[in-house]
Image (cartoon, rainbow, N blue to C red; front, side, top):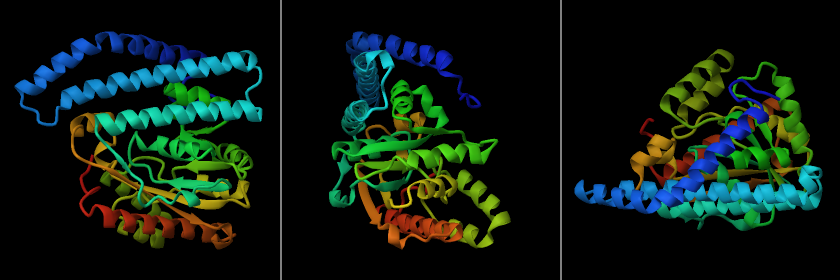
Length: 342
């Protein structure tokens, strides 16, 4: 299906993969020269954080990781004889393996080049088992890969509900298509047609699988928060007031989460929170804040299905309450983070 703004695969993939091949091949060739130029520029401007040098290392290695990911995906396509069989358990595990390798490699580069180390001291791995719907905080281009990496390393299959725009990233596009992740448009013309495939994705959740969604739908900015609150005020003044009190998160948009809960009637819910991505929301912000000393704190809470209300209004209230708790946890980590707008 072709969404507004994202052309179909025959148009999109030659562009996205073509661009990746050109830059992925050029990057290592130009790397020594670019590194030297960046290092000299950093020395001349007395950049103690070596911003330009770090940026060259970050971009080069991200491109290489992406290129290797695409080569692995092409290899799997040949293995599942020329893409004729991709939905069997063995093939799905192979794609999960590639996704796990790719997200591990991305986070390895990011955590060293920016640098942005991950602090997992509060992350209890015993909570991160399958048969769950993972509702995650979304604060940056970088954080969407975390569930795939963390659950993938534990051998749990991750099925995502993602924004359609991410199809421009070839690995997410092709692996997402083969693993039947759900790509959604920002403003669907027919909401029901958008939600049914999310329910179908949820039906695939089992003891070895989780479904992942980011209920905020986009990154936090003060402007976005105002817009969401304005639209809530008209429909539900009480929830608008609860949303107004949230300082670091956007109020959740419940439709996708409700569809997952409907489609997986026995699944628990895992709330996945993190703090530390705030200065790295967009590409320009990543480059502006590179070299700053930050770490990312991770935390997960697991809620048994028996605690989750059965009715829609109750579920929306429950989701808003969890988001309020997430906001309070973020406040304990970084009282000042998130106040800066983008």
